[in-house]
Image (cartoon, rainbow, N blue to C red; front, top):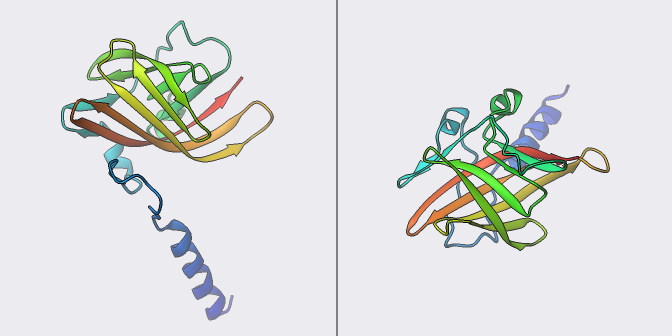
Length: 160
């Protein structure tokens, strides 16, 4: 491979991997893609995301499954599960929480927890359709409780 081709490939790789935050809302802080070590228990303020391995009974049939990392996906340690958007479940600060869909847009879902303490924003940043009924996803979760916020990236899939 010629030296020019190699430099060109490195340049393209650099451009493709850089973070581009144009158009993001300014009241939700932008974060780069966290390193694998920062995925353990993302935390800002007193809110902590936790993984779980038992799927609630309300999730039956078609569903979405979100994970903090590929390692969590391989071992079925879920960050969030939902039944194609109307209800979702997350474990926060040691307690399983149920969320109901408030608003659904193309790449954004907004949920409120049924007890009224949390607001959850899910933004889908990348979607790859694997077949007619299954999509692979990447995105970001924003969890808000009063003045506290917790943000983390996720990977996952939706399917039947």
